[in-house]
Image 1 (spheres, rainbow, N blue to C red):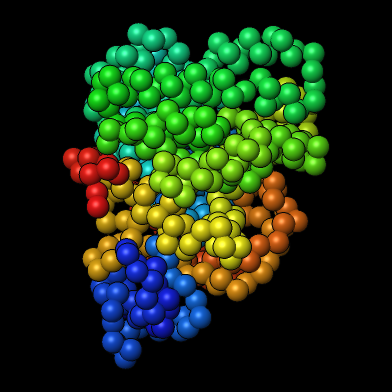
Image 2: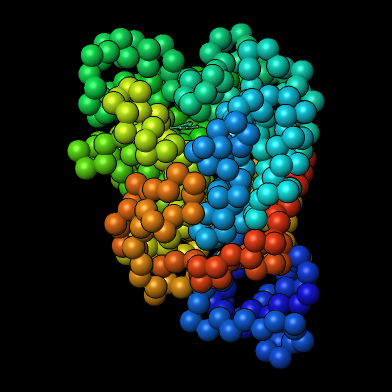
Length: 442
Ligand code: DOR
């Protein structure tokens, strides 16, 4: 199958160019095709921008075990609509993904159900070191240093030391200090206003755990990716990276703050919690100056019914995969960043961090995971239009300019103007961990 995307303004590594991109089967054959190159399908893309598909390296798609909140079919449709062509999913499903067998089961499930490409982390427990040492077909090891949804937690120093010392896969972690959070929970036990969530999971809890993890990574010289940084203070901890450390921020930590609790309540209850407007600004600045490299969503759906329970019974987590790219394209239109920066944060950088083979760039020979966006299109995020199974968005009612309109996964068009090709299946992401991660790439 040959598809010619004609006259698109393509965001290529290092330049933005009006060009014709030829896809042959599942690869980008050339980013500089002749206008009349032979093709089975010609896509007229004048006035549109062509980007590499988004790679979201932190999602919770709830399958198996929690499929009343989300499942791979709904979630991967949400990805296709949002321009996300590859997701890397977290291990706090039921059962937890803590062995090779559980990983293989998830991979098989996704191969059958997912419309976009996929990968799954292996979760650390205090006693699955052998599984972590030998795991294959995975981007890396996820540690909950601080508990969140589910029961995965590794808090003992000795267990953490051994994981960093004795494994070779890249490590990533949820960093909120368990002792601090528990002490704060006792202090605020009688408070049912959800805003207290940000005082329980406070700045200190984030800074203590991130600093502990960064210290482990440095001493053991182990590649480490800091998930969902929520405070400006944490950024200073890993600015001096020594080639080992990368970090990411989520849209909700860029765009929501404690000032939004009165309006949104538990819809913005997340772990780590949302912080102040000043943190929003500091995190944005850290993205702009390269101290944070990646944007991912931490898409973590719960039903509205679950969310409506009084705090602290209301669970933490919000859905975001179908709106993350649009939220950032809107920022481009507001002049806060460039399209090239967005492509770096959401496609190129996550591909490098996780050693994904031939992904994250529009380049000859790379995989044809692409998204066509209309930077002029203005539309509102509406709960009733969400593909995620939970059926709501914390950004409901917000109008954005700049939206994905067509998405290709491995050369096949999976989404076009609100419609899905349900016959498309994504593929398992391939990792080449010998590549050495983000800092070893130009
Ligand atoms: O708020 C959160 N919810 N943070 C996490 O890290 C996990 C997630 C979930 O799985 O619900």
